[in-house]
Image (cartoon, rainbow, N blue to C red):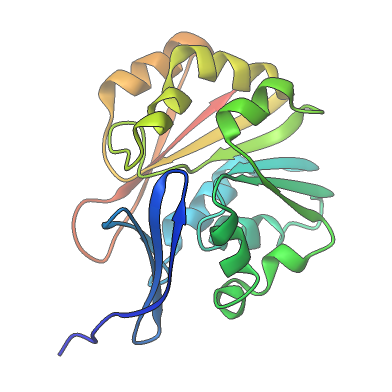
Length: 215
């Protein structure tokens, strides 16, 4: 029998309604009534960090999208990482990571190497204060499955070129998606060249995808 979801908190943001729910031992984040993420697995979020930080040292890391904190927690496992900047547009998601979700992600946001910035990543990256050895992009459900229309601009050629300018000479960009996006991969190739694709199995349905490119 499936556990009934219990709403722990429901808030309004400029982008609509956000809800934090618990179903048994699993926490879920719902955006405008659409499932966004949960804590049931986390393999693909951890893989996002692993492929971005392969062949270290990757001392400076940028994460776009905090989610439930799995990617941040994985990045912090790497001893060579000196600083991690996380840009999360929803203040309440950042707050939940320091509250109900903290036990799930090992209190990752409290690590002294981590800084959480509440901002729109598309705007923040335009004037980012530094370049990064690795960037992990995990915003919404991927290029072709966005809950918020404004997030589509994150996956445009113009935005990809901005990200590339914020990578160090040997920097690496890893992008998470819940579904294939052939046209987006072509855009990635036009900006970065070769694209590596990784698959992460899910409990039900097709695998999550991660694309990796180099500056």
